[in-house]
Image (cartoon, rainbow, N blue to C red; front, side, top):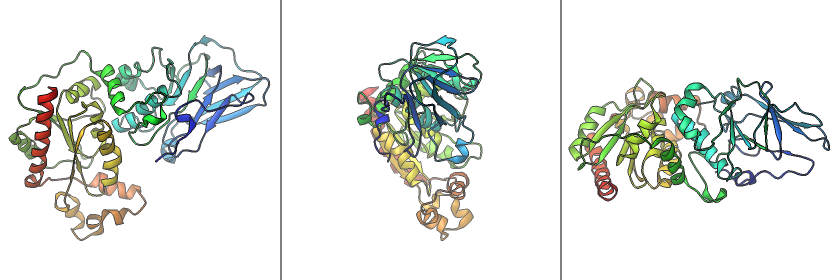
Length: 401
């Protein structure tokens, strides 16, 4: 749990002689605030503050909230913030603050797109930059990413995006927030915002961005719809008896739609599928981030493979409950894991994943439990969970449509 910091809810305090202030005390992120007018030279990735009265100051920052991952941060462009008696001439004036961050790192993975990007943006625009319309200054703003998330980005700003990697003109801003603030994994702490808001309010932003001009037809108005998230392509945590699971869900009474998300999935299509459904089920993985698209009150069932209990809880169970979803946890038995075939039932990998992991979530551990492991559900056992999900989803459908 990240402790409270003033940067969560208001600009960092700066003394009259220091207009650049930074906090570096958090595990996930560094954050800097320029209190007053500043000029960006994108060719050198430098923000200048003209301040003749103070001695020269230089701060450096990589504006991506995973600073604990050295290998990831090595690919993030470093920005320079400097004050002194002189700066470059302003060529383009913006009567607005800048919000500066990187869309590098794990961008393209839907979990990280939201956890490391859009939720932190939401936090800043509802705390430090509340009631303001910032200019988004983005490093690694690749065309496919801007196209995919353009409507969501436009909910945060009416201004064109400045691409830090290919712009050459000097831009002037009224202030600058450099870096993104995280409250934890897929988490918004309403107590740290200017006006208390939660993941339910963030869902409202998603509805504004993606919920327009699309309709996903339903085969039946009398059956609750279950979205079955499918993992394919040998990435691990695949559901080996998916067809049988689909048939079992249909037998219980669901209309089942199999959803195979990818890095090219249209966000409007995904949103309208999930937001008009009554339940979702899938094996723990990035695609479960689509729970953010579901209506509060709908049903979310997460299938939890061996060794992923903690991740399943913090990444998806806690956010689901914060969203007001009806959460169902299906923790597989040893016999439902493909790891049994490789290691045997008595190996510590299978018998006691917690002891195997210890306190070190290493690449070796991640490979075993996230990459090597697939699941084959015990249909007799799983059917009880499907029936519980159906009952909840049917009641939700009857009440909300």
